Image (cartoon, rainbow, N blue to C red):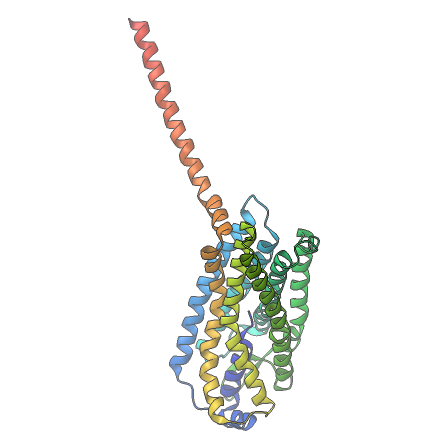
Length: 358
């Protein structure tokens, strides 16, 4: 969900464009030279993650969208989450190539804006689809009697439209302020924000994609766990269908927290350095390494979600089998029946011929 490349690329491109001395003056800490293999490894990792993410999320969308049965409310949110992940994965190869070239940008100003727009929209849309799906589980288990309207398909579709619209609206600064800048002395072009805008953008990104939605998700998850615990104590198990859906949602939420919280924490600490609240250079150097590791972990979340659907989602597996295996079985049965009918017809004709000859 949140785009690591927005801050990561900006930091590295500013180092490459302005030199280590300027970056040291801006943060108060000198930054050493980054080896070429780091960029190569980063490019390879992003490309692998992108290829896996595109294939797996297309598979998820095909199951949810092509199955003859309508999606439940939870599945509607998860299918939109898969679409947001697919959007991110589809445009990651551009950043992979840029990363391999020390974040120099070779795709022009229009793609600079479009690629970053898609990535930043994923930032907002993914997290708020998780907010919706956690609220749906909260209403299903904690407020089951008073939430029928809130859990209707009409409300779910409206919520998805609002999330996509809100994500686009919050991404407007990317369209306006993202631009390519060429540095003649380096003969390189970079895609980044201007230094005056970048700090405000990162503050907004952290606030709306992490600080605000995280308490909502945490509250809903806590109440969901309490409700499940109470039902187990009363020896009154929740409905099997609701229980399976809740287990899948909790797994997706846990995966999100494990993949994204470390990176968000690093970004917040880096913001404190930019605001000169923190000045310790040893920690600043460690953050550079952590940023690279956590960035790949965050991207991997878009690959992990489809895997969780297969492992944890019993209803999803059932739909996948019906969608992909049933046609093959039907064709096999039809072929077998056709063969049996042909043999039966041949035997009947042989019997009739024998009667005529006799």
